[in-house]
Length: 403
Ligand SMILES: [Zn+2]
Image (cartoon, rainbow, N blue to C red):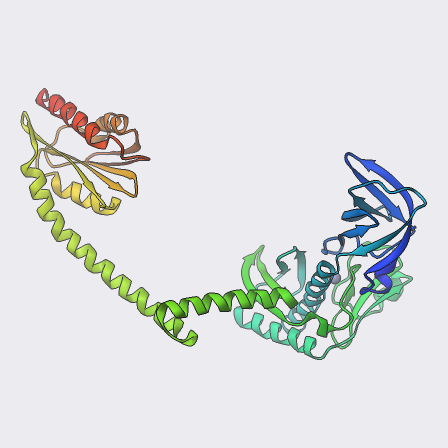
């Protein structure tokens, strides 16, 4: 059985090991060593990576009590090799994991919210709590967890030889079905729980803990948090974004929320006045359209191509252009796409759903509707003018034959 050096010292980055076996797995190899500093994936923590002699260690796993190092080139059995972990990666993962213990303890201690799920990824980490926690509670637990960081408390891992000994401990969380020896990770004066992963020496190594997001999850709350360098990087990126926004508004960072609110209010007022202006403009435009309408027996056909009118306004325009016994087909080209509306006025004898297939086919678009209104879009406005003329002739012919 491989000697697990990471259990004895979480900060040992290198060791000399003897290769006990090397098995080919497709184009990679699984190596077992007499001793290792590589932590195999477990307890929610990703595995270490690094190098073994000339080989790269891609992943490490534990299977039936044995530790397998997946490497990219073969090593000779019996060879002595230097194993070195990617320390930046390991230390980052330990910062997140020890931070997770402190957060879980704080939520449990303050609000009896127990951790029922932990996910540690290479760029974020989440904890799922069994019950909902509020924004205020999150801030309170985050502060308590950081206070444990600032106390720089020792983090100890101890092995217990029996279930009975473990049962007597004041554990926050006890993973079921563990075979002795059972490993307990204890932050002095704070958390104590079963855990197999390497941790920081002291809580000060975590640096800081920041809860960035919270959302409802399976009747409880899922939080996303960042510790150490991850927390710094997040704050740096968000601070720089805020600076860029402040420069855009020519204001201090503190004034950004007010400036954004003012911009949003001003924009809302402008949109409202634009809608009102568009409404009055529509009256003039539809009068013009009706004047240019083609006569088809007892009915009239309005067919116009406009540009830069959005789908909502196009609908209003088509409806105001479809006077009594009139059919209006309006097209608008916006950002290279084509929007179209088919609308009929009072006393018009045909349901627009009967006419829409011919419109869709001519414009190469998709759309539908029934009664007196149908709408559609086409991915391109190329050839729209010719297609419109074609549909107009078809309508005129069809309506000319209609009693
Ligand atoms: Zn743990």
